[in-house]
Length: 215
Image (cartoon, rainbow, N blue to C red; front, top):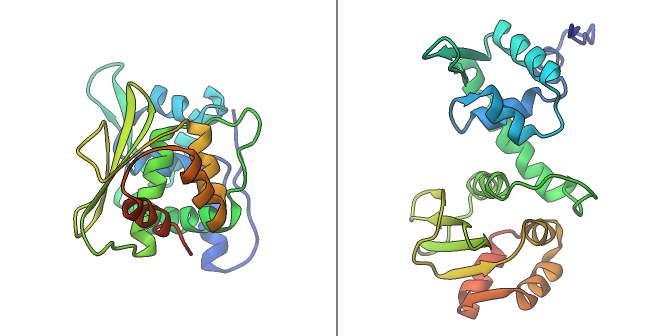
């Protein structure tokens, strides 16, 4: 599939940046590669609706522009990773996540794919970018199914996200759709969500959790 680069015919750093990485899917590919190298199949799995032809075209464009590079460890074992130029887009992705969570998220749409791990990684970036620093280390567990849980932790210096469970101040059992409803609610709606959810932990821990998402 041949793709043409949009040109704004306008000498401006923002316009030039959008010409390079503003195409559909491009920034989401960068978002996924911030977590480390990914194979073509890995990107297809998380980007859901992108066709193989579109993904190939976007990867070729990003590679040509020096945003990503291919790694080959065998004839067929090929992965993609960000170059230094691509890594420099991390604060751009983080700023988009903050703006999106604060102003654009809205309620889940019918048929919309929800990846719990991806949603928790966005939350980790949100809390980091927002400068949320609890007065003490905290550990929160989100349990989506018996075999799919994630731990979100502030260790006193930084926010961390990992697969699986750890000893926690708060354990919340929910569904992927339920978690997105929490994120898209206002302050009062989030408080009601916590009251109705299966939560193990003190009321203080629940308040700390809710307050981390206040604007």
